[in-house]
Amino acid sequence: MRHILLFTACAGALVLAGDGTTPRNSAADYPAHQETKTAVIAAARVPPEQLNRTFPSDLAKKYAVIEVAIYPKDGPAMQVEARDFSLRVSDGIVHPETAQEVAEMWRPHDKPSSLPRNAHVTTEAGIATETHTDPATGRRVTNVGTYQSASVSNDPRTAPPPPTSGIDADRMEARLKTLALPEGKTASPVAGYLFFPLPAKMKKGALEVQYAREDATATLTLPAK
View 1 (cartoon, rainbow, N blue to C red):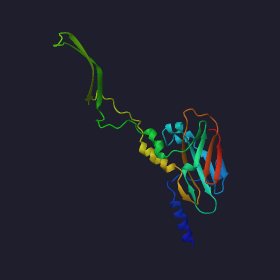
View 2 (view 1 turned 90 degrees about the vertical axis):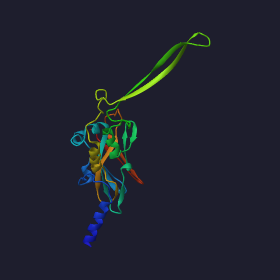
View 3 (view 1 turned 180 degrees about the vertical axis):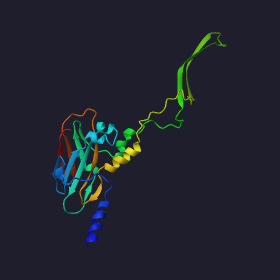
View 4 (view 1 turned 45 degrees about the horizontal axis):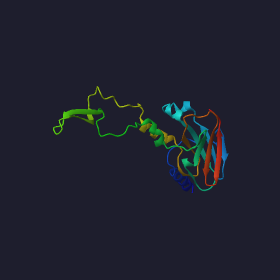
């Protein structure tokens, strides 16, 4: 029987997608926590200085990274999804972004082109005039028209090098996925990060994390950093 129970527990853990972080000993170890019908929900804001040890400083400037933890109550396994959480900010409500979406800020956004990377395209346009004698009337006639031209050069002196951030976006995305809140069914405590995009002008003050799934809701107020 002991082996059967151990196998059941392991099987439940395998349902989750992602590693997340290690839940603290109890929900009371987080700055904010609240009990719902199915679980106790807890949260803490990840300090920017902690994020900067692992990620470029862009992350802490553009996102509020919240560590959330879920402690299920006794009963059947519950479903965990990042979209069940939201963050109230000065401009309204924002939802967490995926690791792939967050990593986009470190990827180049130039439009794709079939030209070589060192190609430099030059375009020219103008107005052309031509004056000649009309053989039928003997009068001088002036014709006016427009012209356009384009040329391609691979001279390295005329083609500026492509911009680069020097950041491996794929590696950052993989790291974000590792820390993100695991999703799936679980009967055991789980924890992980949620990445909420911040408005350009964010008012200082407390943050309000909201959780809602079916008839289980919670509102967690995190103190200002």
